[in-house]
Image (tube, rainbow, N blue to C red):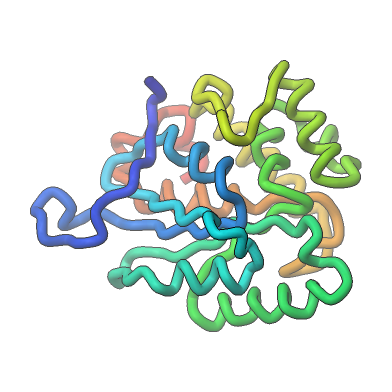
Length: 217
């Protein structure tokens, strides 16, 4: 079993066990990969509840609405894990921008990946210089498949995403993100899932954070 596994906790705090726990509500525009990925990890006093897309409404506005429907306490956080993919093209761009602006106004954090969440997964195994020029989501998935020898977004494998790999991915993603332009919607490949990880680790019980991740706090 992995050193860390994030599992959803009950949405009520009427049990003594959860009195001091912090909850991260993470909405995503994907049905499979982010939900599986975060199910691999566990940290003391932090629980992540992924709200995947299950009804084909994967646009950012729908993701935001799902996240906002879940009540949180003062020290909990709401996040959206979003791809740019086709949502920044043509007529989709205006509604995408509007959803991001609304999320900011409502205190919902956004971890955007351009072009897709798989770029984040790829950074667990590839340097940021290897991913910068990948032209689209298909190219990213192909690169990930080559690195791992396989890739099925419906069947992620725990052994591909160790704590050590997460630490490397966070450092690579931050370096990549600092090099791109475009603000809320980056102009080049990047992934901001590292910001979500840093927020999670900041609220975890420090002494019990795996050694591989402590330099991220």
